[in-house]
Length: 124
Image 1 (cartoon, rainbow, N blue to C red):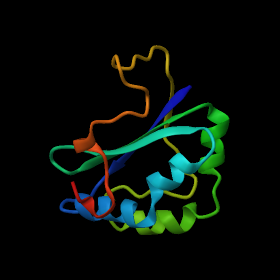
Image 2 (image 1 turned 135 degrees about the horizontal axis):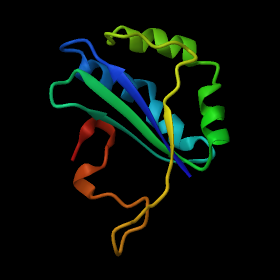
Image 3 (image 1 turned 90 degrees about the vertical axis):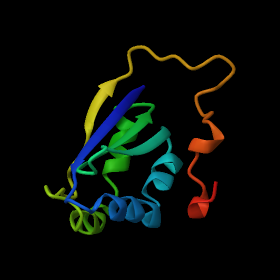
């Protein structure tokens, strides 16, 4: 199992627009629908200048399938409107091997507190 980290440097005042773009394009939904993807998250630094997209995959091969998609060039163009340092269709994240993993008692790896789940329309 691996975890990937894609670090993005965001233009000032663009973090919320980038988040909205990821939602509108269904980027994380598409990634978790990909065979071999267990989860995906987008996190934002307190100052809004850094975004990290992480995902847990079965293998490097599963991640490579995700990063070989045909839509990456057009998606990169949309994303770059919000980035201080642009990405390309071939940009990939850092890959780490998951060496130790624990899940809280009574929860499986997919459990998440209800107040932290992303709901359609952002309704609680």
